[in-house]
Amino acid sequence: MTGKKVERYIKYNLQMTPRHDCDALAQAITDMAAELEYAESELLFLLLENRPIVDLHTHSYGFHTANGRHIIETIKQKYYEYESAS
Image (cartoon, rainbow, N blue to C red):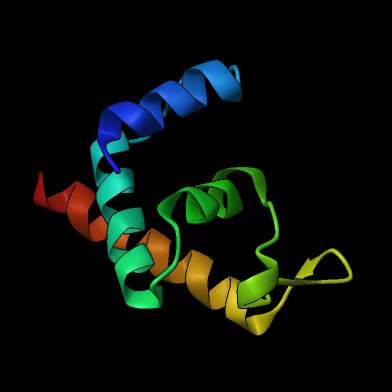
């Protein structure tokens, strides 16, 4: 995943202006996808749209599960590491 893809997704699909470092976000999602061996796009949807990932059990009755919270918090942590490095 690239920063340009993240930026385009936010602009055109979500109809919003990106407020964060799209390159750092893309790298964090790519890293997490590699760790989980799961699709980058699904993790992006989870993070930006709160879209559930059934296979990873991220939601239960509309709320985040412990696993869902862990995935989101790990992506955020990685994002801040990449953001501060740039």
